Image (cartoon, rainbow, N blue to C red; front, top):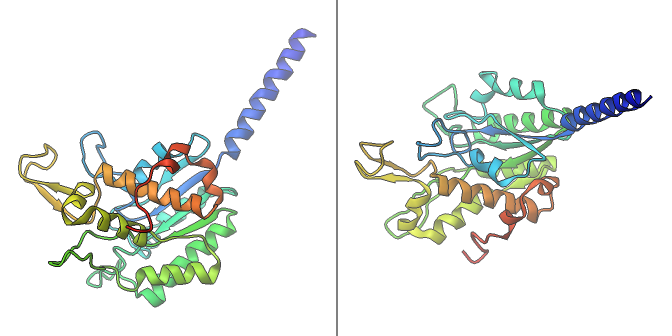
Length: 261
């Protein structure tokens, strides 16, 4: 009898473990190089902000980063990458959607989208199909490029694309994280010189990974990636979105920028 009770208990615990694992939500990321995982993270100074999210979230949620360098809202679909996400997307999951950097590349027909037509349609498709799978879409505008002019003013480089993201979020009632605004404040707070630290600025011989030097104002250092990922999560908490439940408390305690910045 004891053996039978022990067997029943083991089976119950095993079943509970399987159910718990199945119920564990996943945060999917779809986007471009600013969000993507980078190879050789122990040596490579470049990090996508999505790459550091597992450090900032609890073990109660999985992170599945499908963002890829150079992809636009169009090429992510035509290459079959969105279909791969849809195949495993389930009820209770979340999807960060952030495109725009490569949609504006009008010299490349495989990536370019008109912001008010195909770009908008693609975003609407991502939202619609995410919801059909029972998951929660979260739209995000692109992070800014570090482009200060001679007057020390940070210039916009994304045109109408962030506006269209906001319009789709408003029209379809989708949570919207204005990464453009958040990163504008961060860049301005740091200023033209200090902001180099959140990007990739190395002189020849300064970093073994970039022996010939590197001056990149679009992509992020580990420091920049972690700061920007933290800003995104803090905004999620400020909006009281469900994903807030999976953010480590210490992430919300760090003041990176204020409304005055």
